[in-house]
Amino acid sequence: MIKPTQRKLTFIFTTIVIVFNALVLLISFITFNRSLTRSLKNHINHDVQDEYLAYAKNGDFKTLEEMREHEYFQVFDQEGKLISGTYGFQFFNLPVNRDLIAQALSGKQKYDTVDYNNERYLVSYVQVDDQNVSRVAMPLAAILAYERNFVNLSLLMMPVLLVISFLVSRYLVNQAMKPIADVFAFHENFSSNVTHELRSPLASLKGNVEVALRKERSIDDYRETLRLGLREVDRMVDMINNLYMLASSKFRPLDLMKKETNLGSLIRKIVEARRPDIISKKLSIDMTGIDEVKYSCDHALMRRAIANLIDNAVKYTPEGGIIGLELHRDEQRLTLTISNTCDGFNREEMKNFFQPFSRGQNAIQRGIDGKGLGLYIARYIVKSHGGEITVKTTSDRLCTVEITYKTSSSSLLKLI
Image 1 (cartoon, rainbow, N blue to C red):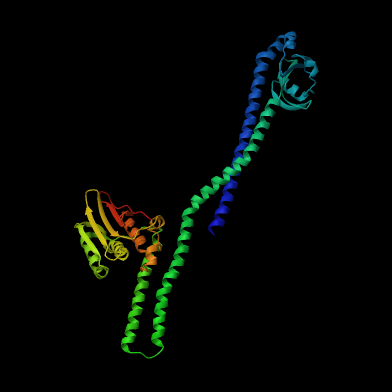
Image 2: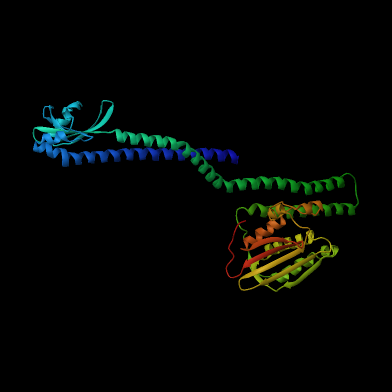
């Protein structure tokens, strides 16, 4: 759906840009033509008033006839009979316009465009005295050449403009459509993963119920079936809550109910809740860097974010590994660092570390349970509080997740 829409919008925008450019060229051509014609008329008036007309009024036809100019100046009587003019005037046999002669005798100067001997001229009639008028004929060959060059240049530019218009339109459309395309891709991926993730617990729940109904069973068997069913329901409820957060994360930050929270105490309680897993994997927990820090935040959401990060550290730390926790606050920022030994990540895994439903190859091979939502949701919560979360690995196979908040300013809500 997105690709056809992008192509359609690109075609529309390209057409609009081409039409706009064509209009600009047309207006430029008209303006160029009028400017040249106006300059030519001013030139005619200057030559008529300051040069030729002065000799005609003084009756100095001999001097006039010796003048070799590229325009043609001729003097006629009121009947249209040729009297004199510039050099070779008698050979320039352009037909006389008697209407313009009459208007010139009445003091009105008019212009006319005439074709003569396969050439175009701009012609003007001007009054000399009560009995005579003058005619100036200026060849338009230079103007026509300029106009042809302008048209030819415009035609040469059109393919270039077409290509540039298409490329610019495609770039702008792609940039404008990118957020929409991301949303469509997000929802497509979201729907696919929701279907996949809910199918497993529903299938397990359905299977347990079907087995329980095949024959009469003891009360303990039914209780076990209900217990297993409740576990799957809890899994689905937790998954739905995660998916709800995932669906909201692209559009808005979370609504926060802030209150002062002792983060040091919160972290200790989360670690204590994971104590059985820590003991079973023989992990070492270093919490000597945990300060008693109070911070205004949404207690439930912050607990969830930190719990997700600690859960990941416990799950992905190899047996006998070390987990280190540090929390401190100064005048400028609050920092929580969670480090754990790991099997390492490649560049592609690091790039997709906070992407939803993304899981590392080691986690898949080792059969570690997870949906790939914990880090994404933790990041969403942290950013909704105005913080930043980063991850890095070191050469000594240590993975470090760091959360920072600026304490000198209010939390600025920011979508991921």
